[in-house]
Amino acid sequence: MRFVRPDWVDSLSFRVVLAHLLGSVLSLGLVAGVLVSVLGQPLMSERSVAMADLIGALQFDAQGHPVEVAHSEQFAWMYRSMGSEVTYRVLDPAGAVVLSPSADRRPLTSSVEEGVFAANLDGVALRGRAVAVMHGGQRWLVQFAASQRLNDRLRNDLWLPLVGSGALVGGGVLLVVVTVITSITLARLLRPLVQTSAQVARITPEALDARLDEARVPSEIRPLVHSFNSALERLERGFELQQEFLATAAHELKTPLAMISAQIEAEPHLVGRATLLRDVQRMARQVQQLLILTETREAQNYRFGSVEPRLLLDEIGSYLQRLADVAGVDIALQVPTGLPPWRADGGALFTLLKNLVENAIQHAPRNTVVRVQATHDGLCVSDAGPGVAAEDLPKLFARFWRGDTRRNDGAGLGLSICRQIAEVHGGTLTAHRGAPGLRVCLHLPADAALAR
Image (cartoon, rainbow, N blue to C red):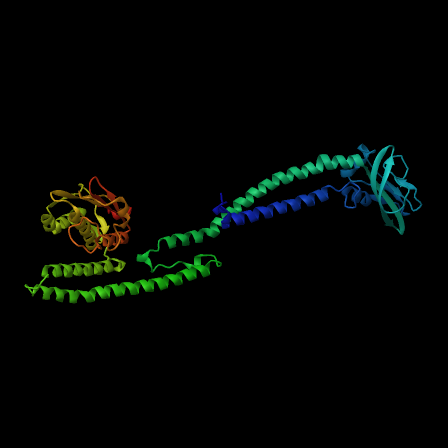
């Protein structure tokens, strides 16, 4: 089975958060290393605070001889309580001990040179350091040593657990804080992209004049948004040219078709006169619907206002009653009492409903009923005809598509016009197979119903 790369791996948010987490882990590692390096220094290190305190606490008499070590209380207890573990010696230039924390005057090492040394005092292994101190032109050597076992205990039982637990707790808190802050920051940074994506989703063939706000996106994305706006401008211009050509061609065809129809009607003995006249009328109907389709695509052609559902349906019933009588079909209008008005363009909604009812009449068998039901958020038109096959339902609103059961040669644009009008109103058209027949419903947006 081929491995499929998950989408979240390529996510910008995931990569930025991962980079921050890796940076935090590396930072914690460096901090822990520094802490181990600093806290892990033995007591006799040059950087040892105890060593510095010892040298700084040396007191000299008037002749420049060391007479005592005035320890701070922070370290005085150490020599009183841990005499066998921590000790020091102050040696004169000849190597004789002049100061010691106890009566023991043995030097810790026989060497009078500075540096690290190892010693054994009464069976206790010591590690120490010797540092020269100059005073009054004389050189004094300070030897400081601590037992190896004390160093081991401090390192293993105090410093390392302290650093480890501190790094674990502090690292966990830091990682959580970094993750939260990074996520919040990314959400704020990516918010303009989410808003831009929503703007793109609202761009339709009816709203090609919309443009994305270039000022609100990050500077790295701005060239892409600018290129998209430029593409929209070219697309809008091309679409306008197409619409202009369609409207001009349809308008120019109306007059020749009318003249041809008049000439055919003036020749009563013309062979095939009825067929020719029917073909010309069909062409004239297609031209007329092309003009209507062109007009319905332009949002500026709509005038929205309050439309009473009952008055609109009564007008449709009266307008199509003659067609229904010829087809032998009844029209049943169902409008609930108290239905609020719709916010819509009355003329456009009349065209939409007329096409739906007319289409239903063309497909309904004789002696059946075409039902028109108004609801709070739209209306539905249903017939008792043969319906549409399930695989043909997606084609129902396509231009120039015609079912096999209609009684005349229609232009195949009526339902396309309906869909166009519905979209301009912010609504949708849906078609469902009935039992029997077909049910087509117009769904208007929630704010299309006006309060009385």
